[in-house]
Amino acid sequence: MPELEGQVAVVTGASRGIGRAVALALAAAGAAVAVNYLAHSEAAAEVVESIHAAGGTAAAYQADVSDPEQVQAFIAAVEGRFGKIDILVNNAGHAESGLLQVIPIASWRRMMAVHLDGAFYCTRLCLPGMIRRRYGRIVNISSIWGITGAANEVAYSAAKAGLVGFTRALALEVAPSGITVNAVAPGVIDTDMNRGYSSQEIEDLRGLIPAGRFGTAEEIAAVVRFLCSPQASYITGQVLSPNGGLVTT
Image (cartoon, rainbow, N blue to C red):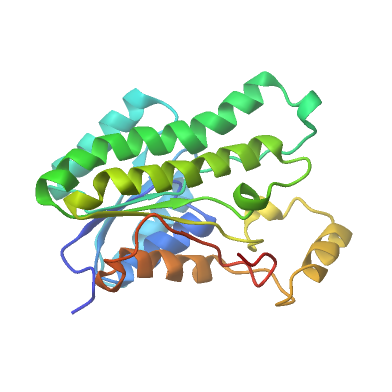
């Protein structure tokens, strides 16, 4: 029997990139998956179709995780359809670079709203059921830049670092209820988010990675799947960083 058979997973920002790979990996492990998306409805539908084609269960839900009312409706819809939520992967993200002194205030606020507020809203609504059932898995997708910081990425780094603190503190609160809370802080991953670099910037960045390549979304999804599995029941409050040796801690 797949290790997540009978469980229900919510993955935010699941229409593309890491979120898509996570949704497919959790479905392959037997979980029914709620595929959240903001704007890419066709991509989200493709994720759901891929899960169905493989014999799994999934449904797509449009919601802006930075809006508490939309999140409330989204989570209520998932619970109404599937009856519960066992796994929450806070993956929805927003990337924007620039020097601190020129970042528009609106951009700063959007960064915090998507990454931090979104994780807060989703987690707060999923926790009551998890606590009642004394079981849950929460995985927050941070970034290596949330650990080290990155020039021209102050807002993004700060938001991702906030998720690390959120993870560690919440893990202490809910461990007595049988809930684990962990973060995954990927290094440079070959997704749309990193395709804005020039070819020279890509080569320069690749040269800094001891493994000699960018990671894949599937490699990150494998880490998330493990953290959601029964084998990870004693792992909580941790930050795992698959980064090809770019940073060792």
